[in-house]
Amino acid sequence: METAVSQAVRQGLSRRRAAVYGAVALLITAWTLAIVYIAVSVVPIDHYLISYYVVDYRFGFTRRGLAGEIVGNVSDADFFTNAYLMRWISTAVYLLGLGALAYKLLKKRRSERRIMVALLLAVLPFGVPYAVYSARPDLFGAVALIILCLGLTAATRPRSMVLCCGLFGAAIAVLALMHEGMALEFGLGATLAILILARGLSAELQRLCAALAIGPGLIVALTVAAFANHDVSGKVCGTVPHRMIETPFASIKSFPDLINYVTGAVRSDADYHDWVCGWYLSTFDHTVTDGIREVAAVGLPALVGSFVLGVVGVALTLRAMSYFSGVSLRSFVGRLDGRYALPGLAALLLLPLFITGVDWTRWLLVVAFDVVVVYVLYADQQPEIDTKPSARAVRLFPLVALGFMLIPLGLAPGGGSTR
Image (cartoon, rainbow, N blue to C red):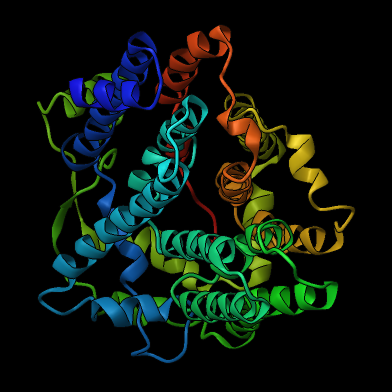
């Protein structure tokens, strides 16, 4: 903490304000370690997250088969070791991506507003809890978007920008074979980056960049939807070994059972073969129509609740970023200069996710991520972020950060056919 305070003082901050930011940084560090500890030892959901790697191409072309090919067949002796490793690699890579955004903000100057925004990145709904408890292959796509945004910010020639978009599109096309949703999740962020961060592109080149960034992944997603084998669950199930694995809530029937589990008084184990065959693999036999029916079966109240929760998360996230960065949302949107068609079309690509999957809060957190990644790098270029914040903003900052930590929307569970 003393080092953080000393560095901040050298940047022209008062020792008192530097101490505030140092204390918040220490609190966020402790909170992060606590989230990781809980995910490892208290309420682990690795049985769910490693299931993204169960299916490969052994029984033909199927969705998410590339994930299984990377990890190895589920019947292999080292499958669980490799799958657990991939689950945590995705978390680590994603957090490094958020760290890269923070580093970009603080690289040239460490003004108070820059420090605030950099610290907030960890506690926002798509921050640490999301990285730890939503460690699906999607996180690799999120990192690809961060790299695209950083690349467009650094590029000075149109040719380099077009190349960045082409590489992003190719990466998403490959990643869509691990999780088809990635072809739809990050188009909004890519188009916003092209229109706001890429400087000097003509309208024609902007459209070309958008096509290169979104087109390849969309083609792969449509190919998966049209040609994926929907008769693999039984075959894959036959290769899943019987192995007892900790599965929280498998044997928890009441609140006292939950307390006993969380405190370590009892364990909650289940046969992984029975769990994955009975709950997850069946979704691979679902068509798009089945996904729509599953969403409809959830019922309007639950869907509306999930949607409202996500909208609140998006609103609070954007408000916090705008307030503490000093860069208004109006100026950010104004940078589009009326060019709403491309972002609008990219936003429409998210609709299939809502139609075929019940994870509505999760999809809205992706929207927040798409916007904020671009917003942070846009704010980095604006003079307002280097202005001195008001005393009120400094007082509110620890409370807002604590509020995000105490209500971690990134823990919102997922579900549905697009899990």
